[in-house]
Length: 135
Image (cartoon, rainbow, N blue to C red; front, top):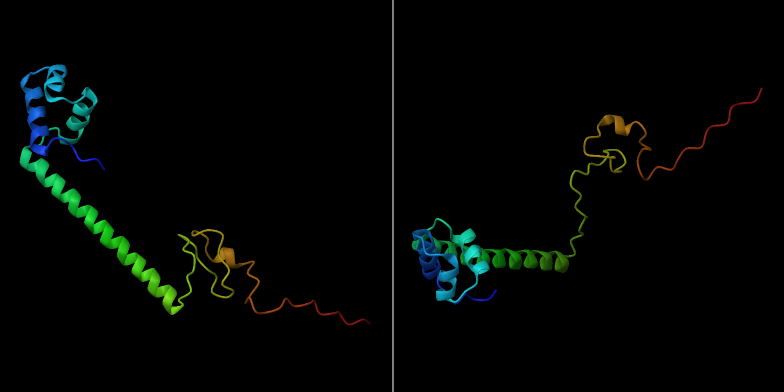
C-alpha cells in the first residue's frame, strides 16, 4: 500500500477545517489533494480526533502483524502434517456419515430415515437372493 504524504493528524486537521466552514474545493487546492481523496478521508476519519486516528493506525499495523504470524503458524502445521505423513481428509461443512457403512448422508439434516436404504458395511458383498426350493 502506498504511504500517504499526510500524517493522520494533518488529515484530521483538514477535516476540521472543512467542518469549520472552509469550502472543500478551496481546502483541496490549498492542501494539494483531490476532492475524491478528501471524501475518502472523511469516510475513514470522520468524527475522530488526531489521537484516535493515530491509535487506529497502530491497531491496523498490529492486526496485520498478527495475521502474518497466524499464516506462518498454519504453514508450519501443514509442514508437520506432510512430514509425519498425516492423511488429510477434505473438510465438508455439515457432512455426516453413516455409523454402519461410512457413507455420507444426503444432508446435515438427514437423520435415521436416510439410513433406511443403507447397504450395510462397505466391506460386505451384496448377497445374492437364495434360490427357492423347487417342488
